[in-house]
Image (cartoon, rainbow, N blue to C red; front, side, top):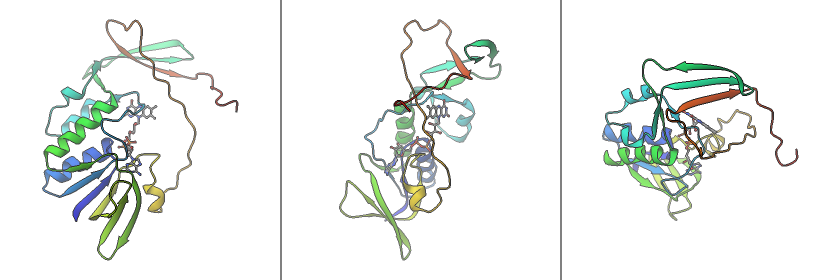
Length: 196
Ligand SMILES: Cc1cc2nc3c(=O)[nH]c(=O)nc-3n(C[C@H](O)[C@H](O)[C@H](O)COP(=O)(O)OP(=O)(O)OC[C@H]3O[C@@H](n4cnc5c(N)ncnc54)[C@H](O)[C@@H]3O)c2cc1C
């Protein structure tokens, strides 16, 4: 029996686990993938998040960028220099896992490769079933941190959004510039997917 079971080991789950464990709560994180897990993401993180944690994020930062370029259909570019602090660029497998490791150091437990398959509130506790253990894990509280594609919101009856298809392409730069910059491109042509 835990104080809290957290479903999902992304930044939301890792943050909740870190702060709860730091305050002495017993925490179990359940993650369906094996950590560290790949996640398609642009990886831009504001350094402002540092104020909410008592550890240094430096080992989880791949790059710091202070030049931003905004363009419309690859032209009419506006270049901006970030004067206050550079933006952090992270690889999500490393960043998310780093956060979970910080939570573990505070006493949180992790079960990865453990997909949550159902939840039930019975008497005074949540029963959380996984693909890993035959017996459901139990907790007074449960946190749904299973991301946009997770099933928890639907199970809890709070899903009101409409899902839309999007595509992500990640490519390695062959000739990375000497001083890296982040590029936001708007107004690009729609890509037709699967012949639709
Ligand atoms: C293309 C793209 C680019 C992005 N770029 C940026 C960016 O540059 N900067 C930024 O701040 N944000 C960016 N985002 C948004 C960012 O990825 C999300 O805001 C963030 O991942 C949300 O974190 P989360 O912890 O809520 O969920 P997630 O990171 O999605 O984590 C949810 C976790 O729950 C697990 N899970 C799901 N179902 C179950 C289950 N049944 N049982 C157990 N575990 C489960 C998943 O495996 C996953 O590890 C981007 C998103 C996309 C798609």
